Image 1 (cartoon, rainbow, N blue to C red):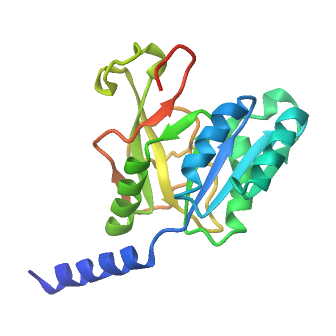
Image 2: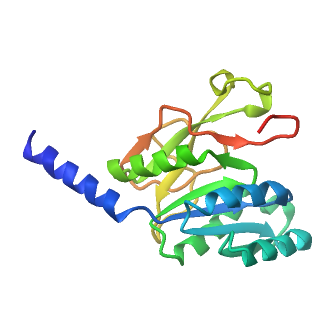
Length: 215
């Protein structure tokens, strides 16, 4: 083993020892039941959780207040504006401000009905720490076109989406013109030039739990 390889392994072990302080930002538009289930899982693995809502959603805001009292989330970001302006990128951008004020080292953007299996999240955090990747990507599957009980591998693939990334004051929502993979959806986060990245080539399911589908 070369000196460079030895140094690389030492650095990887140091990153693992320091651990990851993961901040999660979720958008909640209506389905607080899905959100509650999601938060109960994420709370065990996230250092800081922020939920972004439309300021006009008083019922959702009331429920989030109860969830905050249960310590299932740490902050709520309320955004205002015309419906056409309250895009997901705009809401995630607002939520990132809250994450930046925390002491988190990494971040993850989710919708309220996107669930990650705990064992996959644990494995992903370790892999990202070990490799030192600044950005990671996963495959997005169209589960709406998948029959209940059907294997994930049979679901149509829509492209890659950003997963866990390093968080600093320069992190922002971007058009991802420098992304090294074909992207799907609106989950674009700024990628610095020559940033290191990792692509997960196995399913880390962002399970969109839809009505009529098995959980």
